[in-house]
Image 1 (cartoon, rainbow, N blue to C red):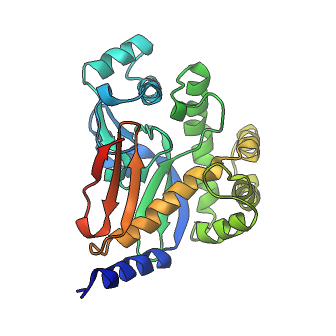
Image 2: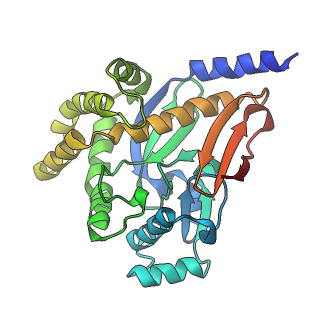
Length: 279
């Protein structure tokens, strides 16, 4: 198909450039990723790993996920499940997903649905919890659990309904282009894009036939969560780079992922496997 690595690389890069990821919906992770319906299973960042190899923050997030899913009633029973090997772990990148920090994602957690409308491939990411005590950094106390339940029971249905009012969801490329000119870099700084997102969604949220208190809570959360757009940017990049990975030729790195123990890359010409080494 290609006569040189350079020619293949040019095709991969063009595929990435053509990608046009749109935010379409927010749905429970289990409805998007079938493996999460198979027993007690969690997604995680980086290459494949076992519980024993996880860092402290990742272990804390796993405990939090066990509590959130109702697999355990307290920290000690969650630890027992995990240490006895009764929880399965799957890398996010193996199921078209990404996740911030430890990437721990469980079946009932809301996930962003981002589709590259050019090629039809999708990418998923959980929702940003804000700052402070959050599960992505390993916190799992009752305040963290309450927020996760609120995101599942209130934030997810409101956002899903608001996005349903848009014919093709939100064009993230256009929004990110604006955000860059306003100082965002889509890692530590997302305030401009989060504000643009709030401005775009607010009229649609306000018109929903939902409980007014819940609408107010969602608007409050979006207005103060400066990092909310970060997870959208992650899913955007995943969708765009996975489009390039469809070429299956060349030497372009289409994914980079780490978990504190291992660092992995995916190379266009090598297909699906993550090439990984110890950090």
